[in-house]
Image (cartoon, rainbow, N blue to C red; front, top):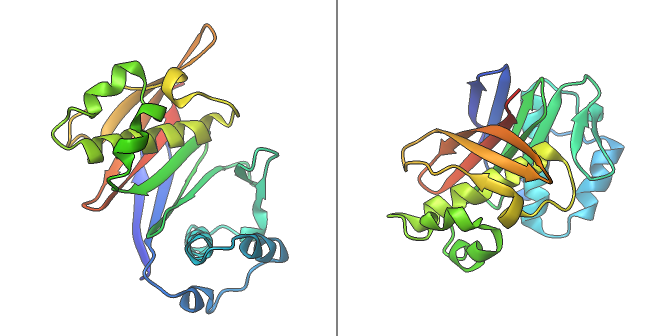
Length: 209
């Protein structure tokens, strides 16, 4: 399947998503990988991780970005030679990138029952409303993607999802949200954009300036 969505968001941010339905061979076709990208592809042992990587590379091309300009810092976070900020994400059936002028984070996940089992590991004490919501799987998944997006935007190893990241309560149909990050005595606030679908959701996190 070609490009699924190309979304323009406030702050000169563009989001591109791809639904991964192709075979590995189809994703590889008509695609010339750089030597570095080929190495990264070879490091991924499972087929779905390889497909996710290739889908994100196709999105990078759709965004008009030369994949050779995508670099990675010591924490493994991508960045662009141009100075623009890039966030990359993929799951088993979805891939996405976000591009903007300021630091941002983007994450995409399918809805799975298992999110309920791991919820205590990432929920803040003030987020347990999610477990009792009308649609706990969807609510928990949205909180998880928001925290993953925050983690990418912060680019600081060792952040505690359950203690330092707090997602403000939201309604099921809400496409905008807010989050707080507590680091020592510092409080940092972020705006969230939720992209909702019947089988998955994605969240973009951008720090309020």
